[in-house]
Length: 492
Ligand SMILES: Cc1cc2nc3c(=O)[nH]c(=O)nc-3n(C[C@H](O)[C@H](O)[C@H](O)COP(=O)(O)O)c2cc1C
Ligand SMILES: [Mn+2]
Image (tube, rainbow, N blue to C red):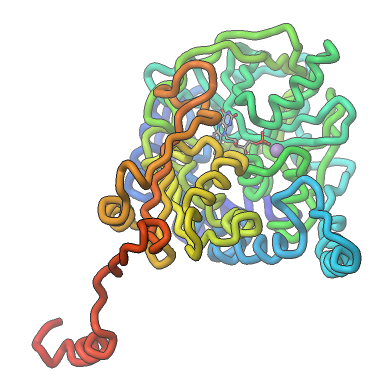
């Protein structure tokens, strides 16, 4: 991935006029976060703070905080290009499933042969181990100290400083399943970090496998490197699918990795900073509170602890961070990239889905608007149950299904259809399922309610043969004529 590291991305943002270098002295305590929040609220540029009080490392915020910058981070001009490539892959390789679909006889073979070029492409995309990399220009083991990193405290009630944009590398005890996930890390002390992986995430799963054997799990935390790696750490891939192969697929080039100095893990050679250590099955500590993307503090709770054995970094490392809180913030763009990139994957299992919007005010899991191509009675409910069965979409609390042609990205249009097309008794369903860990309104215990609203037009079979009206539409010929003559009428 030569030439695609964080420096190259910073240079690209700067030459496009999308990065401001801040030379005034700023504090990691609340001040940088307040600035980042204001920039995010106005769709502003990324910022590189070069004069951070008490630190030599500069701090980068907002690098992903627009759809355009997000696309650039993934090596594209527009996110749709990336979605199209994933769509083509999903069409040949069953990306959404753990195992290839079994089909009878010749059809299965034909499908495999057709998928072969794509599978070979994936093999070419395995990480390549190299001997050395910029991420290990400076190596500190016995004198490793997290206090040297300009870690931010974002909100006044936060329990301390948190590393907010990390790639957390783990593997299962057999070394078969590498995983890269983004989980915030509270700095408890010079060599202790809180591991806030949610119970359903793959890092937690690897941890439980090690803990089950009574063994401490090696962990490496990388910051920076190719921005595509940071995105991949947030992508909702099924367990066992390697985020580094996914990142390489997006980038079109294998990720170069180096062995860590004190743990048996591989990390991206061109990362800015790497923190190495182990997580003991017995040790837990109180993590939080943390001002979260819900727009509220998540309360303090017990989480596992990482004991740091080394901190390595490049000679002139940049510390990347993000600030979360009430929308819109930088993580909204990471989430929107996922919404676009995974839509074609959703379509491989729920083919009637046309479009999906996880509105920003829904904070990923509270609301989903889905449009479908409806052709049979009961289909909206079928789609709801499918969505509630799909990976992290299972957390969706309020799910609205509308017809194809309704713009799901226009909340007014969706709510107009809910009001007009749905009968509250006939067209809603209450379900239960896994609740988002961050949902403070959910009942205790991890299971929460789900409300589905069928705002599609009803077929005659669904309403005892009653005809259902079409929404108003202009006469096409008249509409074209008025468009053509608009200036003739004296309008601008
Ligand atoms: C900025 C940001 C912060 C996040 N913080 C956390 C976190 O603290 N804990 C967590 O479990 N997931 C967090 N996530 C979500 C996970 O990164 C995401 O669900 C990812 O798919 C998990 O990967 P995994 O399934 O390989 O574990 C965060 C995502 C973003 C974009
Ligand atoms: Mn994963």
